[in-house]
View 1 (tube, rainbow, N blue to C red):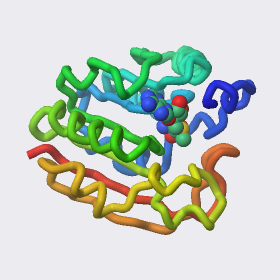
View 2 (cartoon, helix red, strand yellow):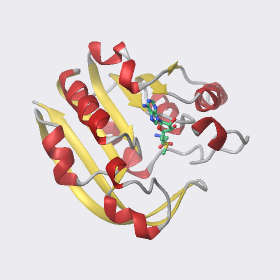
View 3 (cartoon, helix red, strand yellow):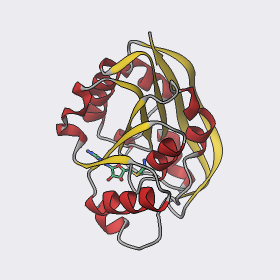
Length: 196
Ligand SMILES: C[S@@+](CC[C@H](N)C(=O)[O-])C[C@H]1O[C@@H](n2cnc3c(N)ncnc32)[C@H](O)[C@@H]1O
């Protein structure tokens, strides 16, 4: 499905980083090791590498990873790209200073597991950053999946991310203009949590 969506040369969500990441990304300890999950065509991992982080990015779309590699090359930065599925990756056995989850809409059972693994794999003071659509997004029709199971309320996220101290935990309505994929007034959960 994602290979098909990413088949054009054009980047579906553009080549600029997500707004929330751009606003908060530098809260991740300087020069740290960052894991970007469901990184798609690489706009977020590339930006993090430009900011001086050591970045590893995983996505299950081969075409997405191919475009992500090209973007990193064009911007002259190094990102370790992995084409793989979050349901079956050893990446959470490593320790990270930051984990970035931008519009990573997974089935809830898998998401709960990934969130537990993410918290466990953060170093002390490590930062977890997330932006995802809430179930209220569906009638907006400006992006994101239509299956409520894939969407995330802030309080649900909080219950899945035990072990973090939340500096930002909110649902907001905001204008999103990130490529053709996300375009217009939207309803999102935003999280910045720090591992205690
Ligand atoms: C809405 S896109 C977001 C891409 C990127 N984070 C961004 O903001 O530009 C969702 C991404 O999740 C990836 N994805 C979905 N399920 C996945 C899984 N189980 N493992 C790895 N990646 C997955 C898709 O391939 C797709 O690239």
